[in-house]
Image 1 (tube, rainbow, N blue to C red):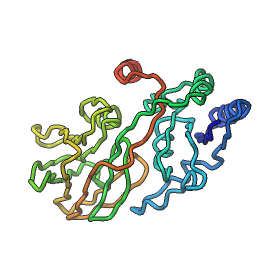
Image 2: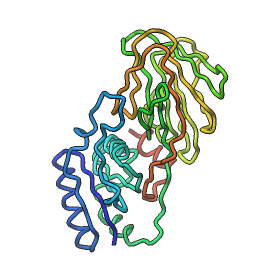
Image 3: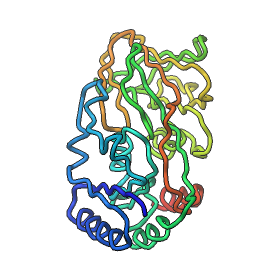
Length: 281
């Protein structure tokens, strides 16, 4: 039998559903723990120290699976709060719910069958690690955004790839996305939809001053540095949750995280999901 951790968004309909689901899974003999605290309160921070995140579990209490009730934001926070990445699946109580593959109507029956499988299919989704001036500041499953702190003021950002000055952006900001995040903020900024099975960094300038500043798709094996050239206040926002203040001459280094997020395969085809959830909104 499986050891399952349930994480719920702090809204009444979601919380009550997850309590009912916990009782149902326990009846089938599984060990179920319901996370009691509000994960959104635990995740609030403006510090560059990632240790502010309260772990969902310890090394002695690592669950086999995590089930998340909420929207994409809840899934992102849950991934951030896991000290060790374990397979998870989301139940959509949000709007688009691109990271939450199950609906409340089908989740219970799916999980009862899934938890009986001996070799379930698990999908790996790459994440991006961010360092500022050599100090680790966080990891993104969707994206990080370097953005001006002054509305209507542009930033000047230099991108260095494998030691070569490759591009200079003058824009409101720069989105650095994973393939998983290509259907999120990066897509809204004009970036491409990328198959999540690929491993690449996606860079999308926000409202670029020069029209030849186009989105870049960069292989993860390359060494990528982003430098804030001008003395203008800016911030690095990771997955919409944590905010790091950037100063002049800050050097932001990006690399593929050694720990991908692990998602339970719910049988959703990526391209069908793009059509259903994004193009028919």
